[in-house]
Image 1: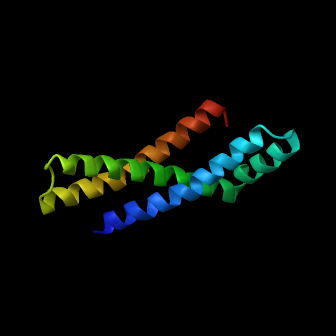
Image 2: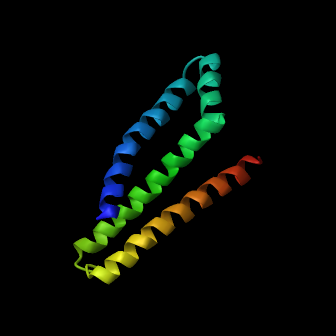
Length: 110
């Protein structure tokens, strides 16, 4: 039940995060000064924390969707198995988020 609630919350958070991505893309085609302003916001500590949270929400929501897809086949519906899958979803979302950010920083050279 908790994972179902978190899945819904991450879905809602993705709406907000996608607006931020759209804002950044719109700024990218605008004047250089405006892009630098938006990029500065996303490059700040708070901006990076928001982007990190957005990445986690995206990964968690994706894995939750895969979990539901598996359940649609009739597999993994037993209480014990469903609980293990829920924990795997949580661990997987954290691992994927960290991997994405580590690869991003390595690719950026920072």
